Image (cartoon, rainbow, N blue to C red; front, side, top):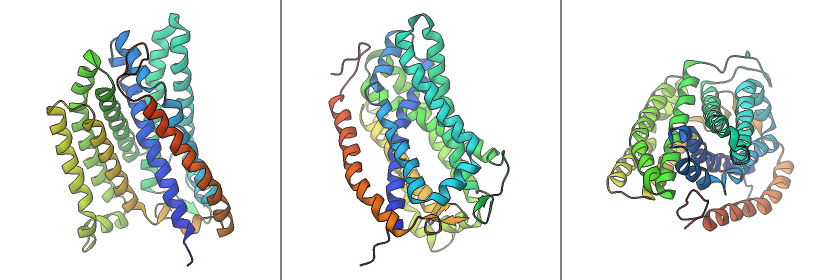
Length: 334
C-alpha cells in the first residue's frame, strides 16, 4: 500500500501547531492579564503557576516551524518572505517576555518595569500570531515559486481583527487556567474575567468566521454551499454547545471544567480553520503536495520524528503531572 506521507506530515505539523497554541496560549494569556493582578501575592502566584512549564511549551513552536521547513520547504520560504515582519515581531516578543520572566525575580528593584515588559511581550506575541493567521487566510501574492507582494501586504483590517481576537482568546485561556490553579482573591478575579472574556472570545470567533467567508469564494463554498453545509454544520453547533457548557460550569463554580471547555472551543475552531484551508498550505496558492519535499526525505524525517515525538509528548505530560494541583506565591504545588 502506497501511504501518502504528505498527508501524514501535514497532520504532524497541524498537531504540533495546535499543541503550541493551547499550551503557550494560556501562559501568554496570563502575561496579557498580568498587570491587572494585585502586586505581590497574586502576581507571584500567577507567575508561579506557569513557571515549571512555560519554556517547554515553546518546544512545539520549534517543532511546527522546523517541520514546515523540512517537509514543506516551498511553503516555508513563501510564508516567511510574505510575513517576515510579524514573524520577527513574534519571536522578539517571546524573547523579551522570557527575559522579563526571569529578571522580575532577579532584579526586584525594577520589578515594575519587568512586569510591564512581561505583559507587553505577551500581548505582542499573541497579536503577532493572530496577524500571521489572518494574513495566511487572506492569501499571499505569488509569482512562480516566489513571493510577489509588498512589505506591508500582511497589514489589513482583517489581520488586525484576527490579531486582537487571538489576544482575547489567549486571555480567556489564561483566566481559566488560573481558575483551575489558583485560590482566594486571584481565583475570584480570574473567574470574573472569564465571564466577559468568554463572551468576547465567542463574539471574536463569530466575527472572524463571517469575515473569512467573504475573503474567498472557496471559503464561502466550503461552508455555505450544498451539500457541504451538512458536513461542516456540526463544527459551529459544537462550538455553541461547548460555550453553553462553559457558562454552566462557571455558574456551578467548577474549577477544571472551564479550562477544558475552553480548550474544546479552541480545538473546534482549529478544525474549522483546517476545513477552510485544506488542501492548501498557502491558501489559494500552493497545496500541500506542491509544497512537499520528495518522498525519500519524508521517509527519512519520519523515522526521526517517530523517535523524538514520543519523547516530547512524554516529558510534556510528565511535567504537567508533577506540577498538577494548586499553586501559591511561594511556588509550591498542592
